[in-house]
Every structure is written in C-alpha cells, then in structure tokens.
Image 1 (cartoon, one colour):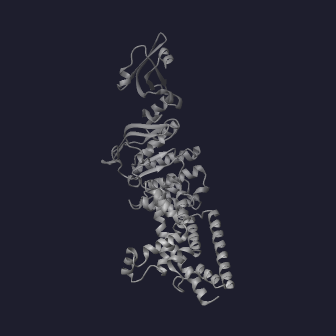
Image 2 (image 1 turned 180 degrees about the horizontal axis):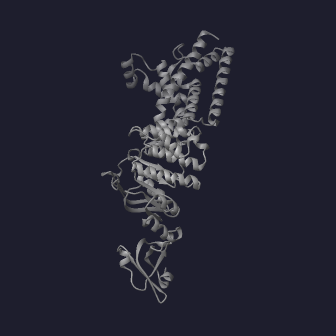
Image 3 (image 1 turned 180 degrees about the vertical axis):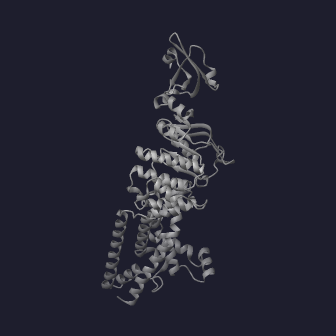
Length: 306
Length: 226
C-alpha cells in the first residue's frame, strides 16, 4: 500500500489557530497525540474537508493516484462526500431516532455505490453489537455508541480512515477486542489510517508512527514508542520546541559523569547548540529509547529576562 | 344549512388542501435555502416571506388584483396560455392563498431544519452523502414534525382567509365563495342562525387545529427501524 498525505496551512479561529505542515507516509497507520486543545481533532477535520475556513493545502496520494483536496487559492476542491474519508467522531454521531441497524444500513447503502460490502455479519459479531441492532441509537451507552460508530465507518468503505478517540468510552476488555479487530481489518483492507488518542499505551498497540501536537502545531514526530517516552502533556505544553527521538550509540560512565553518544538527524535547532547549553532529555525503558528536547532550555539569566 | 353553504365548505376544504399540498414542495427548498444560505439576499427574502404575517390581507389582495387582472401583463399572459382569468377564479384563489400562507409553511420548516444538528450532517457527508442526499436522508426525516406543523397551520390559516379571498375572488358561488365569505354574507343579510352555525364550526376547527399543532410539537420522535 502506497499512501501519502500532505497538509500544509493555517486555520485561524478566535482565540486559537492551527498551523501545520506535515507530509505523512501513510503506508503504516499514523497516531496523533497531544494535550486537550492541541488541534488534533481540527487536523482530522481539515483533512476530511469539514473546516470550510481552512485555506491550506491538502494533497493525498492513494495507490499511486494523487488528488488535491484543497488549495490555498481555491479552497476545498473536493467536497467531503467525494473524499471517501471514514471519520469516527469522538462523540460517535449516530443518527438519533434510528436503530443501530438503520445507522449501519445508512453507511452500507452509500458504500454499495462504490462496490460490494462484505463481512457485515462478522464485523457486527466482532464488535459485539449484534444484540443492539434493534435498539434506538440514543439509548446506547457511550461504549456501545462508539462500537456502532466504528462499524458504521468501516462499512462505508473508506479510502482513508480518520479516528478521533474512537475507544475512549470502552472498558479495557472491549478496547482490547476493538484494537485486535481494527488491526486485522487494516491489515486485510490496506486502508491508511490516522488515529487520534491521548493514550500512548493505546497508540503503541495500533500505530508504529506518531505525531505529537501542542498549541495547534506538530511538536514531535517519530516512532510511537519513542515519542511516547518524550511526550507527556506538561512537557509538550512547556516545550515550545521540537522533540526528536534518537538512537543511542554508546553510553559510558567515567568518574560519575555519563557520556551518551546519540545519532540524530541534523536540524537547525541542533546546529545552534553549543557546549554548555542545557538540554532536556528523557530516558525510557528500555534505555535505548532515548530522546532529547533539542531546543536549548533558557539559562537562568534568559529565564529572568522573559 | 343550504346547498350553497355546503358548497362553500367543500370549496374551502378544496382550497386549503390544494394550497397545503402545493406549498410543501414549494416551501421546502425555500426554507432550506433560508437556513443554509450565507447570501446577503437572505434577509430580504426572509422579510418578503414573512410579509403576510404583518400585512393587512386586503393590501396583498389589492396588489394581486392589480398584477393578475387580465389587462395587466402577468394576468394577460395567464389568459393567453390558459384561456381563463386568474382574478375571480379558483386558480387565482389558490395562487393568492399560496402567497398569503407561505410563512405558515416556511417558518415551521425552517425551525425544524435549524434543529437538525450540524454534527449529523457532517457524519452523513463522511459516510458518502451528497448535500442533496443529506437533505433527503437526514434533514427531511428529522424535520417531519415541522412538516406536520406547517401543514396543519397552512390548512387552518387558509380555511380562515377572508380579506385576500374577497379582493381576489369576490363572492361567486361554487367558484370563489368560501366559508368566511359565506359567513360574512349571512351576517349582511341578517341570517344570524346560519352565520352562527358556520362560525362555530370554524371556531371549533381552528381550535382543534392549533391543539393538534401543540400536541405534535410536544410528541417524542418515533424511532426509524432498519
């Protein structure tokens, strides 16, 4: 599966703005994490075409076919329903006043315009919603609603899957079953996915690569395991710089001083570093999951002058 | 009750039914446009639609008479294609009723359309629904109480029309003599017994209609089963 996604532009809102420039290889699922209000959901909405004020560029390449979904000067070029983006919303958004079956049928009927819809029964069983089919959507619990919303989205035959905290309301047992099913489904259907979650434990199980967002920007990008070590809400909020994951080449302790040699891709912030600069770093478990906050921490004098 | 009175009741029901049936497809896209449009023309159209709520019916009837009479361009054009005049005819009454009852259909529909959460439309679009599909598959089913309310109000309002009908249609038995005109005529001829019987019937009908509207707006939504 060859898939890329480029999102470049700014969405200004009263009190906040999203400013992203990412070129993502979607050959494998990508995770997005970060604190509340970081812009994770808005990033997904920009990709899906649900933000009409977004004046940036969204370009997607799926199976070698490139499509420009929006451009700075021309706005949204491809309407939402023609993007074939499956979006699992955080709040499920099942149609009220309709049964679970009617909600699933809504997706199936429209997906049939694209091609045959298969494995409906097995999906319903795997997501443990077979006993809910005749129940009105508004009477379901939060977890049940999310499972129905996942089924409805997967049945819509998406070309790109966007999932926004899709398992937050489910207990651990259901979450394990959902993750297992989703991983198998992605493997079978080869559909690229962007998965938003606060939980790095969840992300590590589903996605190999992660973005971390804070204050409307992407502040870290790397392997899910590495980024999860570097990131927590406080650190990212306070960072104002970029985290990079690194590979430890050697680590020696001489007279109580640990000297760690790491391999890092050269960046502008790295070039500015000099002996005596203070940098933040975290060492995970295993210790080879090493990461450094590359933007030097301000020294005491600078801190006072801020 | 005379044959002429029964004819007036039948004609009133026919006029109200025809107006309601024609207004549903006419008012639906208009209400949807008013809800969704960001055009600067929207307030103007909104005001024009609501005009019959504040305008004396005789004013609307007078202008319709001026515009649609056979010597005016629009009236003459109608005569040239149908061979009949719009003024003092049942067709003219239907047209006048459509205009006069427009806000009674458009406003409940617009309110119902506005109550459909934007989130549901977004969900539908990500499931492959085009804007037209969203309207048909999400908005219209969710707005069915708005349709019922608008239909009941339009029917009842048309039944009670007087000024517009009198100006546009006059008092031609079997053609334009509707219930309100018949009551007026009975009062003028001091036939209070017939006037009272018809007026009481209209009063009860109007009350029941409004009662139905309030029942409809407080009912729970039925669940659509797949």
